[in-house]
Length: 176
Length: 176
DNA sequence: TATAGTGGTTGCGTTCTGCAACTACTATAT
DNA sequence: ATATAGTAGTTGCAGAACGCAACCACTATA
Image 1 (cartoon, helix red, strand yellow):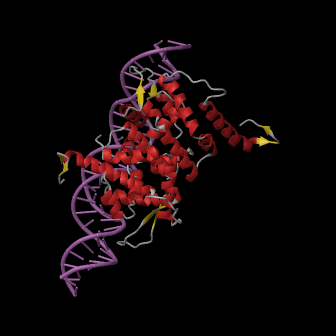
Image 2 (image 1 turned 30 degrees about the vertical axis):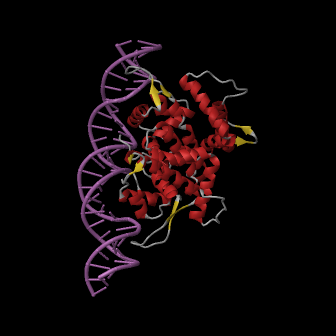
């Protein structure tokens, strides 16, 4: 994989510029999916197992993920490196653009909306929390829920609202 | 091109997640390359003509570029839309990551370095200038050189420095 | 009338992607 | 001991995307 040029934008595109790598990272970061099966079955876009296997190898080779030592057939845990944690601003920028200029579902858009509303400090907070989860950094004390808890709460609220609306009759919630 | 999911990150990846689209946009934005031949011959990564033609069609379809009306064999000028201008933060984030975590050449890295050093306001300044160039927005008055002139100067200085160093003898510049 | 320049298109071989089935191993329950 | 479920992948194969070189249709200039 010799680089096509010395441009830093190209250097990033060569590693991350395909239809799956950034989605795998998204699921590792926001979904806290650390195992092959979790990434495979949890992917809303439906990644194929051979593609996932290939991307995990590439991301490890690029120094974005590390793979815990595990023999074949054993649970192998993937962790973000600092290099991987630093892809969050890229994912954030992509999500903001998608939110503004592409269609999408309300549930999934709510997470991006919250991140943007909270401002740049929130991204730093998320990255700090990723260092705790993936790099064994000492936890920082928050008052109140952590950044990922707030994201999950926003997502759950939007999901409930979206699934409630069509099955609510006379203000009474019905079974889905 | 039905979306694989309603996630805004995925929505952006579906449009921009390949090995060429963002590099074409980089050349339109930073190199001010507006014509097919300029993009083709100016590409440092060496894009093929059929790939470039395909990407221009896709970027126009996605509402990122517009194509000036021109018959076959006539110069057709491509312009950024507001949607296209708003990809700058994505390109900026990718470049920052590439600068930090991937190797590259000093000349090409200097532009990214300057953008980062100047801070977020500089990105806004660049986007404003793109609106002038591509959307016929009224020019904003600056004192001193515009943002792209500053970038080009940084690039030229780094390029000179890189090519000067080995051919400078006794402090006197020699012909390359 | 020729030459250079415009924006592409066409063949053709290579690489990447995606689906389904399968492999090899471990852990747990019977 | 044997069956079952769960782990992380691998393999085969077909179709799509990519990349190189050559070519096309048109315009402007000499």
